[in-house]
Length: 369
Image (cartoon, rainbow, N blue to C red; front, side, top):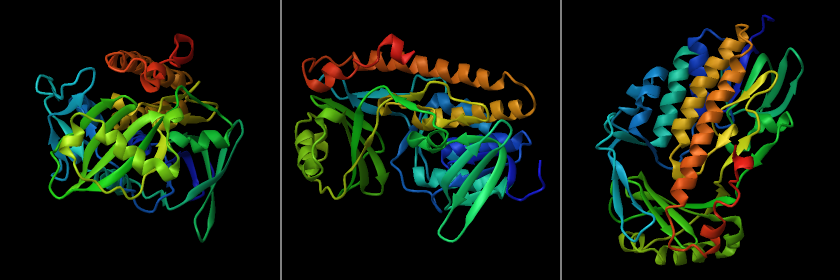
């Protein structure tokens, strides 16, 4: 390899949980890598629950102590109105791993980035990926910020850019959308603290997800199908109507002011194969999960861990390493699809509504597996 400060064994594009988990794993394996992240500092995201069964993974990554920080809350379960009119408490109390964690996502991502930087200074913050060129032996990535353009060279490139899968797009690798679910998301200021829990409630046209975001502030998300999305100018009226139609949330959250509504894809999508000649995808870039599954951040960290080891093995001449990674993540994805179908089939109150009638139509065996 060339003796150049911008030459690496592996380039990781994306500095979120999946990308940093990959970088931490590669560094532990002695692989010279760098991380490219478009944002100079982490962007605030909605709260995220980590279930108890993620603890062994957190230990393997060496980050269990991060989630045990006082900024993150001990989490014993959530409340859900799904499949019946009752708001039921879903608790982890019987789980052999004990409690989970409700993260301050902004702080957690800062912790991850600081941990990576404490062992490796090759972090290109505030740089956007402009171009990727790959041949049989080398990958060249062009990145830039407002003042400079840098050419990075490496043996391998890892896509950790989330649902948009930017590296894959540059390499003309298509991602398949298995459904058309979208999320309308907004934050709400409250006059008093919201309970330290996540509440999920199904409705005729989709389902609500509500979680603590900051002191006296919550994140609210409504999930529905593309065909049911309102026009941008009608989104606030649409959301107020959908909240009014809930049995439980409308009593808990009685007065809301909606400022900015973001509309974004929130369905299931996947790559046919999560790797190629000298590239690999982790996190949402490889497999994007329905938020009802709670796979999100745990899956991102897990794919970073397994993806990092796969790339390290591959660079150490173990040719089967990438196919082993594919086997692991595809098995996890198959299990997810089965659990997803089972969960949605629990809800039979509105079987003739557009959302529930069409929610699982696209998950045919041929397409999902």
